[in-house]
Length: 264
Image 1 (cartoon, rainbow, N blue to C red):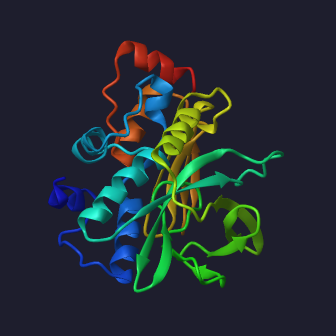
Image 2 (image 1 turned 30 degrees about the vertical axis):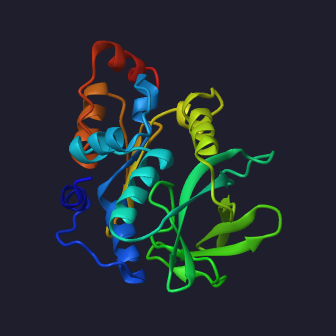
C-alpha cells in the first residue's frame, strides 16, 4: 500500500506514530475527506473488497463507499501504521427497527496501552467522530454532541447518540472478532438484498469542521452553523453537486446514468 498517497487523500502530510492521539487524528481526517456513499450499488457496479480494488477506488479515484469498503481499507492503513485492528460486526438500530436487525455494519477494535477502542469511519449520519474507549461508559463530546458506548447484555456493546437531549441508538457491536466469511455475507446482504437501506435511494455524506454535508432523497443539507437545505431534481445539477461538494466524479455510462436517474 502506498501509505503516503493514502495519507494525502485524507489530508495528512506526515506519517503518525501509533498512539491514542494518532487514532483520533486518523479517524477525524478520514471522515472529513472520504465521503460515505452508496452510488456504485445503485448504478450497478459490483463492489470489490480486495485491498487493491478499494485503494484504486477510494484513493486513486477519490471515491467513497460504505462501511464494508471504507473500514476495510482504513484497517489496512492502521495495520501499516503499526496498529492491530480487529474486525467486529454490528447491528444498526438507527431507525428503530421492529425486529432485530442483521449484522450489516463493520467496525474495528484497536488495543492501545491495554485499552480497547472502537474506531469507525464508515457509518454516516451522526456517526461518532472520535474513537470510543470500550471501558468508558460516560458520554464524550465529539464536536457533534455527546456519544457513548456501553455494555449490552445481549448484543455486546451499544453505541448511542445524545442529540439535543434525545438519546438514539446507533448500533450494537459484538465484542468478538468477525470471521471473513461473516463479513462477506454481511456485505453481500447489504449490497444486494432488496430490503437493504442502501438499495432504496442515493445517500452521500462527508463531515466538515462544523458538521456534515449530505445529499439524501434529493435534498442537499449542510449541518452546522448556518445550516441549510436545498432540493435538487435536475440530473445534471445533481451530478455536478456530487463532484463539487463531495469530490465524486462518477464518469457514468448511459446505462448507469439511467439507473441512477431511477433513484432521483
